Image (cartoon, rainbow, N blue to C red; front, side):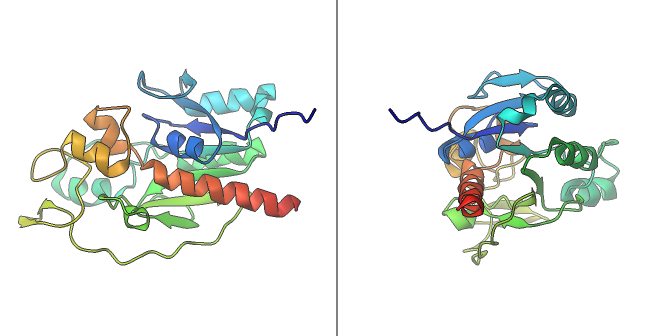
Length: 234
């Protein structure tokens, strides 16, 4: 009898509500998450705690070896576009810690292939891959950049946007095919609109939806990783 094939497993760090994790599951991975906040709607096995401390623990105890890939979405408030742009110019917001560098250092120490995700802005990652909702026919743009560690894949073409994001921006009201899945008011998306636009149905918490990435993104990345791994061992 042929032994069953073991599914690849991904560790989803800074997991939030599970947008990234769901995409990896759709690509064929088993998923374990970790987030410092209580995430009762996270749809996979989950460790509540500091993501970097947990990763260090897995490395020190050898348990990291049960994973094929690590995905990390460290908090990005320190250098994202809103923080360094509008908020800074208005004197809004507080001090934020940049966790990208310590996250990368631990991921390198893990010896595993990894993905670091960040939004557009000034976060110090390589933009090996940039994904956008228009690539997947979504009603949200939500550009995200991904640094790939210990593996690589070709960059996909970025299609031309079909119009504006609906709502008020800089005092101008526009209509368009996309909804703004962040904030509240000013024509921004309602919770049901955000759920539909991103393909996220398991949480209706606005704050979680505004932080999430569409599962389509990590399904694409997961499939690309599995293809790259097959090519290495072919």
